[in-house]
Image (cartoon, rainbow over all chains, first blue to last red; front, side, top):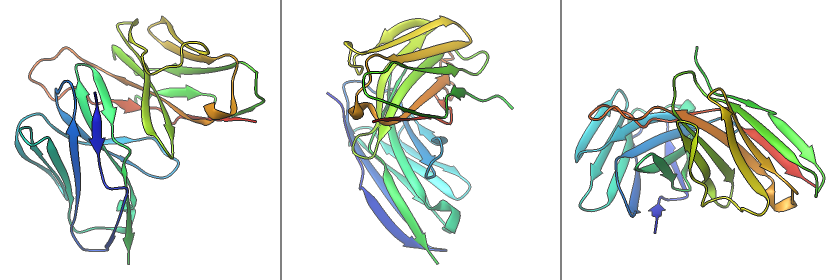
Length: 108
Length: 118
């Protein structure tokens, strides 16, 4: 079976740091992805982890622990434009299986 | 600027009608995916193709949904007959696989087709 869990909603303040967690239990694993989706728009790729550890890309970082079935997305120096849904997805062979997403609201 | 193109962007139809959604993947991509997104379920995988061959359509209600890829530049998702519970945004995404050791598997999404069945 496939199970990917994320918090439904989070709030944070402009300039702050926020961590969005994702836990997964899947029948196969070939990598973990994070996507960003603004309201009414298509999901866009943020990050990819296939080995344990931290991947940093500008203000965004993503961490993976395969033994724990756990990942997080870290957003630093939050900006208003970071208000969006953040989707955790596990790749199993070619397929990307998505969690239901975390809606992040950034307040001034 | 390469992108996945979907049509129609919006569709309102009545229950029982046939709906066809079309997708043009990015040139050179060999995998195509159909997802459905609702508030309650998030992004659900309906079907996907690799090199135009259907690989997995287990997420799709077989009695009313069908997905095809008649050529490398066109993927279709058809619903017949449509029902109100089919109302959702349908996304097509394409990607490229087969490059072991590289950062592959990233999917590029189209803008989606918002379907409303009355």
